[in-house]
Length: 282
Image 1 (cartoon, one colour):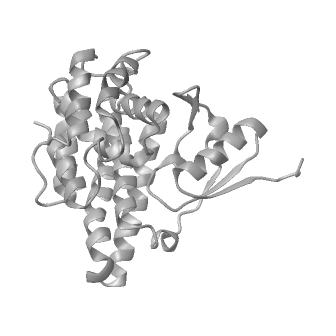
Image 2 (spheres, rainbow, N blue to C red):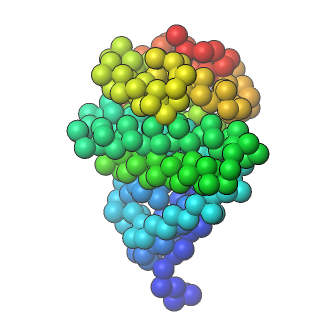
Image 3 (cartoon, rainbow, N blue to C red):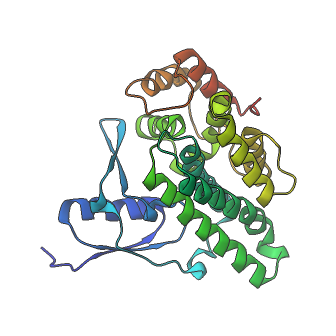
């Protein structure tokens, strides 16, 4: 109707997702200018929620043709939102490392992405007043690079338990997207660690490369990073009701994504209970 030549999306994951939805229905090319670290701009994936259930679709129709990264547009992103957005992106890289489609190239890119974001976030949070402008700009640039790397990983391989849980909590219980990823990721990592030892060692090593005092445990390292930087670390904080955890576990085991560890409802309920309470993963 408007005879538009293209779709231009300036913003975070929700804005980019809306642009993708328009492109899916119109075949219009996309120009995307990300202002957060979600990484959605680098993926051929679109998520849509209908009747309280979130589903995802992978199609090149929604892969943006042009991405423009301008670090100046990220300088006003609040520190807390920077952390949750960054850990949302790290989740893409973590699951890429233990995906059934994992490969050496994506492994390297995933580790680069984790290291880039993990090293940048402390400076972004604490450096608003303490760091020189050039140091803050470098940290913001590294975070954008990490977001691109992590998003590229998500687009190249499949998703697992972590994303299934977040899609359930967001689609059915309306929890906020990036914050939910931030709370769930350490617990999903702990759940899968016995079945993905090599992948988790790479996650822990990447965190240590970026944050010198990070825990040797991938799950605890990410939990500590989020908590220390002022991000939410419990589902209770996000408004999740304890009585809804059982329903969430039931949904999570239906139509499951491939996952290293077997999906058992009782174990997933314990995972969600720990995440609800904000317990540090074991």
